[in-house]
Length: 304
Image (cartoon, rainbow, N blue to C red; front, side, top):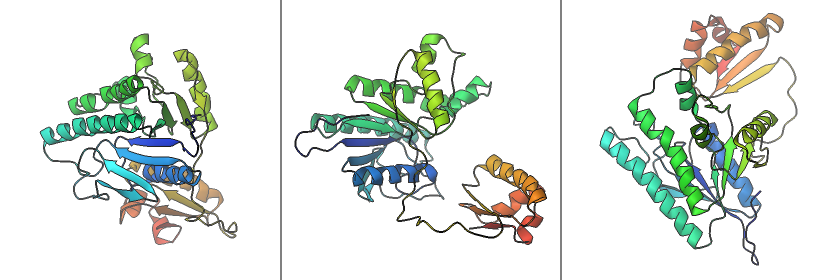
């Protein structure tokens, strides 16, 4: 997709730009970046991570270091801090600083021939979708979310740095906007290439590219795992076991899983489900609200 200007042993050099996901500690989005970085490094690619916004909230801080290295991947919070401030002014300052410092660092790397492309794994326009559905956004959301992603891509375009966009969820198509503006805020705006995580999203990319009148290099990169962390084992025998791994912050998703299990238990009463990545007591609480609380007490549902 992107070819490095190979001179002798020169390797491809990639900077991964994170806008709100924490690094190196976090949930699925963080682990995907980390595992993709490890895979690229194993192939001789130079990878670094720039976090342009704070990712932690007081009382739930996973990442304390603003600079460091994880699995051979150097990272830096260009905000100068990892944790959200109580002050509105400080939050806005860190956001501006984070974006400006990241762009300056990218320019420095580019000038030193240490940058071939930018990888953007966070390009969700979920708030645009909410706006399209008639939901009102706060002033902070309007200011901090909608213009900055377009501004970031426009600036990268001016720098002449190829941008690879990852698609990992259903994008919002804001066709209700005037055509020119709709194209500017498309999930693919400013992209050179696209890495969808499924064929379904690849097909969406093709349709969106046609709408934009553009073409994109596209490579499907599905869910990734590290075989050193997840050893291959024999397929388990016995009663069916389902594993749901997510945060209980996604309450609707967890509730949907519980409602689904009602139908599963009608046909497979001995099936079990394990909820991972949840907070203490949240599984039982949500299960009770969804009318399957007895599954916790009889062992068919458990936390891990």
